[in-house]
Length: 351
Ligand SMILES: [Zn+2]
Image (cartoon, rainbow, N blue to C red; front, side):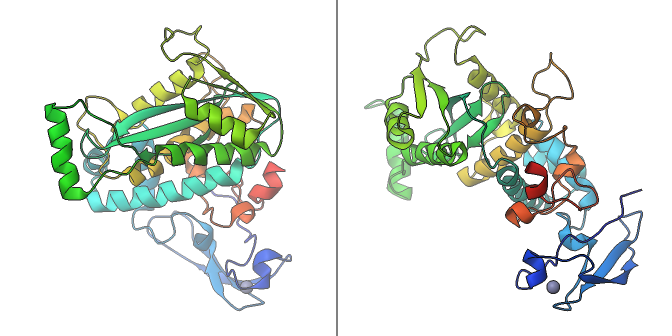
């Protein structure tokens, strides 16, 4: 039995009941029955703009033909399974799975942005990059990952194409020359991508003090000094240190290993590869949602403690169904994922 539903606002962005809804801004207009739901779906009409809408208008699975597959698909895609294998397992077409993946991941990107609006002061953060590729190994991508040390929450991540020099006269260099002759010189947006991550870090910190730990790559030092000034203390350690639990970079190495395990397309020596870099960025957002709001912080600790709780953003671990419940495209006015009756917005809960 689902909770009773009360529309939190008029879904019409042009209606003034969208921004400032009053109680009873709507009329009840019966309900309709669909095959994939046990209960009828209530329908409403806005008293102000007269627009009709239903509970479905607020849900992520609106217009879905197979809403019952969303949870399973999310769990498979965050368990290292590729898109084609998901299609086989779920008995769906590959194109349908790809479309569903994009829809879920785009909404989860908004959800991550909506929930993570500010960072607590005086915490320690770690930044590192992993490398993978799109289509061919001569088309590398960089994936910068920024985490908070205590909670192990992923604060920001993205992917971008990079260009790597190959050994002169090698077979690989000839392969790259042939490829670039055909497709043009490969762009290198690695620096821009790291800058973007720093930009988001800066906005989330909002002038508070923090500590940042990275390896000795020169660009981290430059960007940290330029964007953060002396508010962020920056410590560097050699990436050649043994990768043990005593290594100061251990938490970020652990997160990267988890990423390679949970996202099949990041795995080394595997059939699975990203065909397009921007799809990797989308799946990274799926991982962030899974890591921050669902997966327990560690295997040894409290199984009901997720990174988002340690950061003080959510009060409990969210369920998969909750992550995929409400559309999140109204920023802080979106319905909070933990609010099953749709009564609370992200803004109310997070505040
Ligand atoms: Zn309206």
